[in-house]
Image (cartoon, rainbow, N blue to C red; front, side, top):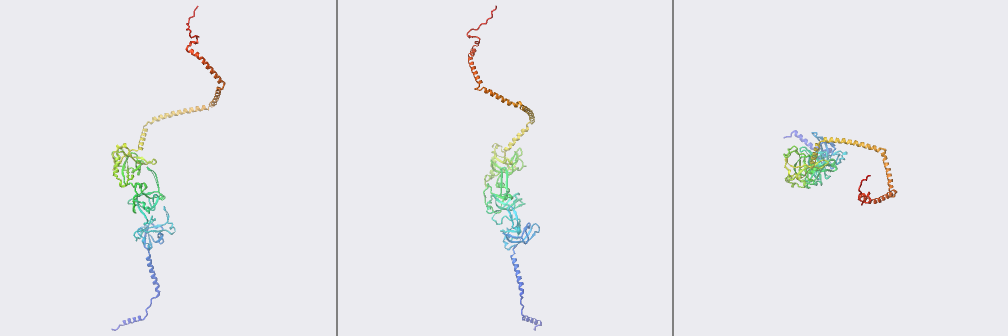
Length: 558
């Protein structure tokens, strides 16, 4: 079969192609090919060197700028903020940041972010270096599972790193403890830690705080430790007197937390991390919280309870054995039938642990039976003044043997009634009241009338005294009265001269002496005559005492 014209023509083209030499690649294509390869390598290297992209959320983006705000760890740049935008619900800001490739181990569940900027707080001034450079975000690596890409940025720096040596404690308290993150935790006035966070639980209506205690001070915390708020200055004026407790200067300015082991408890053993304790409002409440086993009794006080408050001590001969729990307590409850009048109920707690008894050794039933036996032998409670300045009172327990036979068991609102007796002040008050009643019963009108008469007589007497005084003044003003001292002096001088004339050396004295001697001789001479006349009075008329008495005769007439 012969070749067709078409086949012949194709054969000829093949022969011509073989006979023509091939064309080479132009060198000019080498430059774009190399540039393309370099570009691909740069893209691959850039992709390989890019770090993870993370998302940060915070309440506001104050001081954060896209493209310029850095992310640092130990002052080393580990990332940069790429974009700042608002969330979909406009409630917060969302920050997108590109991290360095070697930061993958840092992005764990425990990692923390916060903004570093100038701050002035109780601890001093921080972040001054950002005044010129601007704020930046600090990263504190954690120790959790890696691979996390979303984090929250805190407004304040953390107290301590997550892996710091120490002890973290959870505190639970009622409302009123105004603690904030950064407040100091002190032990006997020395700062040993900080408050990491404080928040309010709306469900339980309680405050929860998380504190960090640095090592080696974490060994001070045991299962017997009590925590309470440090208000700086604690001033108390109650039945126990005046007490002043001053914490550190930092606690004085902003408050804080302090802790310790009460004297009545053993030292205790160590506690685990994240243990939970109760935060008491003050040291006294913390000490009272250790006495968790007690007996409750009710005092039915017929006297005034003014000055008696919750927390007042219950003492037995000066030794505290309990605490007043409520004043008044169940005020509207029904009074016992054995009571004629209305009494004010006061709830007290007898705490045997105050006597140095360990918790496991306290048998409350035995103590209750013991008190009931003592009621029958005169154990009574009374209210006494603990501080005359404030008028605060306390409950005193003592034996009154004279009232031993008057005890009648009573129950008030399912609680045993602790028998009471009137205090000395109540007795004095009753006596004063009786005295006032007697004074009110006195007839005051006659007394006032008599008093008016006495006043009138007194006024008349005063008038006479005034007149007598005026007369005496007139007499004293008389010239003769004024000259009386001069005349008296002259008379005394004349008398003195007369007495000088009667001196032993004067003639008058010698003559008087001679006259007295003659008179004496005369008296001696007259003594016989006087004796004779005394014996025979007629001797004065007759010469002889022996003659017979004459016989009278009549005259003879002519």
